[in-house]
Structure formats: structure tokens, C-alpha cells
Length: 118
Image: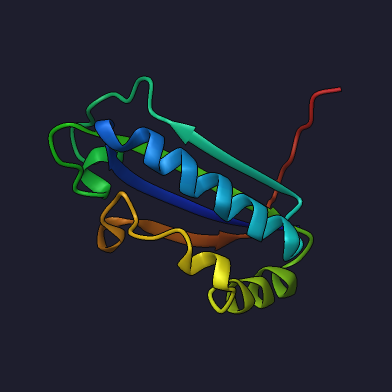
């Protein structure tokens, strides 16, 4: 299993725009082999003394934090998907992103513990 994660900030008034592109992205990722996709919109995020989500992405006033992850069967599938997805014409159909991608944090992880509800 391999997990891609993303942390970004989205202007609150652009939430519907973000949900629209997240749904498009999810459909494409699923076609490329994603097992699970989670998009999470900020409800409560405490301010940290040294760092926190807002500081990490240099969130501006009126922006909400989004924490997302995509689960792939393995790292190879995730890497191949990313190459293919960005060539997929449906990605262009998303139009302008409702967030500043230069302030987005992303990474790939190998799970060391998973716990699933029954």
C-alpha cells in the first residue's frame, strides 16, 4: 500500500469550486487505480506556538485548510498514475485551481499501521 497526501488552503468562498475539482480528480484517480480517496475540509485547527497547518501552507485570511490523501495498491501504481493522470485530457477540463498550488504540501508515504473499522 502507498499513500499520497496533500495539505493546502482554499478560500472559504471557493469551497464549492474545490469540491467540484476534487470530484473530477477522484474519478480520474480511480480510473488509474486509486483504492481510496479522502478530501477533508477544516472544521477546527488550533494555532500552534511553533508550527501548525496554517503556517505550513502560509494560509491567508479567509482560507480553510484541506487535508487529502489517496491510497494506492503500491508505490509503482501511484507513480504510474501520476504520470498518466497529468496527461489525461480530463485534468485540463478542471480549469483553474481554486487554490495556490505553490503553497501546497504533498508527499508519498508507506503506511506503518492501519486500523479499519469493522
